[in-house]
Length: 409
Ligand code: 5CA
Ligand code: ZN
Image 1 (spheres, rainbow, N blue to C red):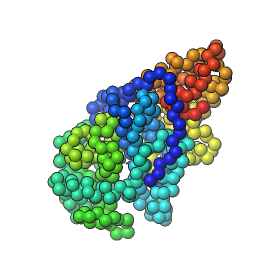
Image 2: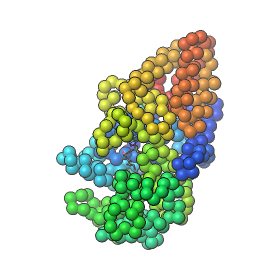
Image 3: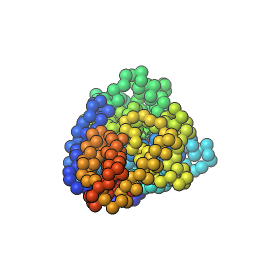
Image 4: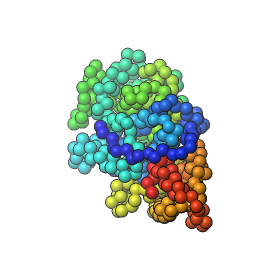
C-alpha cells in the first residue's frame, strides 16, 4: 500500500540527544542506541471506522520517537501495518451492508488524510495484512515444522509453551492473561486447545468469509499477531529498536508477536523496547470503535479545527498516561496555538537556544511533550513580557516546534 506524504523536518542547530524510553518488558527506561538507521514498527489501524483521538494520540507518541531520532541525524526505518482483514472489519461490513474491501479502502484513505493533516511522519513501508499473506503462510508452516504450532479442526494454533520467554513483554499472571485474551480477540474457552491462551495463526476458510490459498495450511486467513510479525521481520528483521502501540496491545498482541518471532528465529528479543501509549477516554470510558464513544480527527477537521491545534492537544498529555478528551482540552490547545503563532510572527524576541535545548532534553527523556510545551510557553511569555532583541529567535522557535513537535506555526 502507499503511505502518505511526508512533511519536511527542519534541521536544528546543535546536537540532538539519544532517546531514553520506558520499556514495558523490563518495566524501566532504556536508552536506545540505534545505528545510523533506527528501526521502528508501530501497529496500524483496523480500518473499519475513522481515526479517533485515541488512535491519533498513539501515533503522535511514535511520531515523537522519530523526531527525536531524526534530531540525532539518524535515519528512521519505520514500518506500519493495516489490519485490512479481521473479524471486526468483516462484522462491521456485514452490519452496514458494505463490501469489506471497500470499507477497508475507504477508512484507510481517511486515515492517510488525517495523518497528513496532523503532519505525522509516514512509514517507509505501509503494508496491508492481505498483501502480507504470501509471507505469512511460510512462517506458519515453519512454526508447524518446529513443533510450535498445532491443528485444531482445520485451524492452526501457536503453542505459547514453545517460547521460553513467553510472558516477558507484559508480565501478567495467567488469570489476567486469560481475561484479556477473551476480551481482545482470543478464544481461551475453545475446547481442544493445548493452552487456553494459544492464539490462532491461521483460520481455515469459513462459509461466506474471504479466504486465501495457504499452501499446506489449506485455504483460510491469517491470525492477527502473525500478521505484524511477518511484516516486521520482512522489513526490519529481528532486534529492531521499538515495537509500538497503545497499552491495549501489550497483551496479547505484542506478547504473542514476540513469541512467534522468537521461536521462528531462535533469537531474543524481537524488539529492544516495547513502548505503549496510554488510553484516551471520552465520558469516562476508553474511546473505542466497538463502544462508539468517539471524537474523530476528520470530524474536527470538517468543523474547521486547525490540525495543529489537535496536535497541541495531544502533546498536552504525557504519552504514557491515560487521559480524557474534553472540549476544554481542545480550547486550551487552540488558545496556545494562537499565542505561539503571534509570538513567532513578531520580528524578534529573547534568545531561543535555551528553549531548543530544553525541548530536546525533555523529549529525549521518555517523550515528555507536556514539558516541551511548557518550555515553549516560557519563551513566549518572556517575549510577551519583555520583548527581546534577537531577530533570529522567532525563526528558531518556529523550526524547533516544527521539527520536534510536528506543529507548523
Ligand atoms: N490493527 C490493530 C493493531 S495490529 C489495532 O489494534 N488496530 S486499532 O485500530 O484497534 O488500533 C490502532 C492503534 O490505536 C493501536 O495501537 C491501539 O492500541 C491504539 N488505540 C486504540 N484505541 C485507543 C485509545 N482509546 N487510546 C489510545 N490509543 C488507542
Ligand atoms: Zn499489530
